[in-house]
Image 1 (cartoon, rainbow, N blue to C red):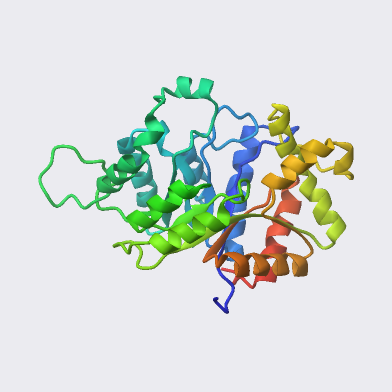
Image 2 (image 1 turned 180 degrees about the horizontal axis):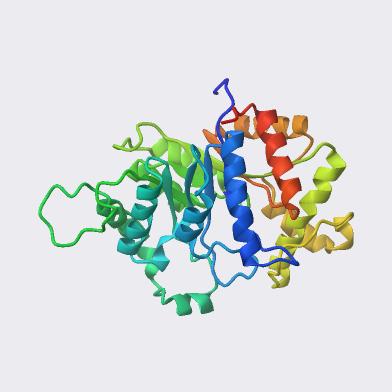
Length: 334
């Protein structure tokens, strides 16, 4: 086990808040990326979601270009691109462009989940069997970034020869096996699907094959983190995320809601059990409690890196939560 704190990264949901719109969410995303950069976070990632009024990151590469404008050091990337929704060539063009804008600090995290419902997949024109081609399309995408040192008619400019860090993302053993086979870093979505975390990490590490990108396995674990000066305030802030997940089970994915004083007045016992299972990988509390919770999770999983989600309605409270977390964990401000 490492003696020094492992890196912390940030997954931004780019939430659209009640009373605000997507433009506000994108403006805040840019500010959060700059804030995370200054605090010493390792990566700033956003994810591809479709047909969700409450999330403004559908055009993932565009959001990353916007969010990274005022950053200096932090890596920016996708957590992730749902590759079955796209031609690998197009993603190569998009992320090759990002690599030209932000050389040496772009991550391309790839997932095979649709990121939406079946009706929306039809609108995207994603074929029903597209997910089955995911391993082949990952390899095709990686090849578009190979140096253009041999004659060829088709090149994915400006991706050809660009530096790109590829990641495999997932919430089951499939992604773990693929990441191990390809010798790529692996990110597990335990911030909303923690059930198979331990099994997936074991598979990834035990089957890992070194590659030109990575000589030893590197596992990043997703975790919800809400930090405040008091435990009561941290748990109050956390009710925003709890209400959002309750909405999943109610079939209503509305805008991000302000926190409430008593979450038990909002959900039923059954909804509480469902949400608590999905949010099982969560640390909420004061700086000392957050540090202890992350240390315990690192001891249990052997994580090489954490990527945290801080789904807080108020932007200033969210920035304060990230600052307290960074200080408690011992990050070095840029």
